[in-house]
Length: 262
Image 1 (cartoon, rainbow, N blue to C red):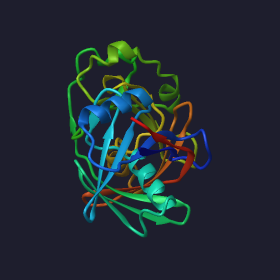
Image 2: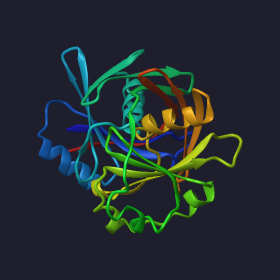
Image 3: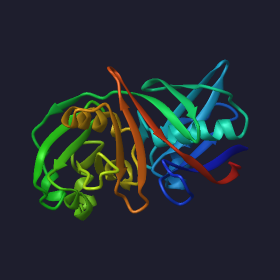
Image 4: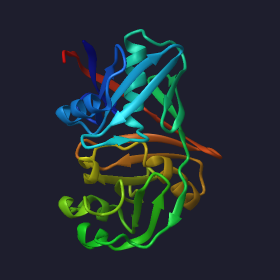
């Protein structure tokens, strides 16, 4: 039997932010089993936590494939371990993106994530037609194989209505549309689409902010930022840009706890 927790991450109340399933494994499971369960659950990410001697292994599976970096399911996993008493103090997860450190900061959780690099790139074939003809201010590709599209105004981010079937054929893990925020409480806003891995629109995406944070930090001339993801559920991210890392902060709440019996 495997304990299963559903956690809303980057959320200060239930039914907002990004839901992640967190499985506390009782022993190693096959990649096939983990992928099938992630598909069965259907959340943008299912996280698998396994204690191996003195280390905590963490892996993330989207409905269609394993991913190499995920912020919201990392935050959710730390939240669960603290809540059930399986960890105290700082948590260091061993992942495919190296060691990710999680710390409690009052009611918030701070994630120490890798800072992703950006490069100019020509638009991938089919990108703009799949996005409905958005007018880009800038186009970048991240070292995590995402495309960042900056547009001139927040309203363009809000109005975006991608053709997900077409966007799934674009050669990228996902596509972020971003703009400076009109609301003075936030620095920038984003929506993120990843139909190629089974997530049409991700509610709140920690990993893409490992690239968005340094991008907007340079444009705005500040290293601490507040970002808002404009999905239907919505979510808030507290960001700090360091030399080679990005700190991402947010809250989490548990929605239910159960068990997987297969």
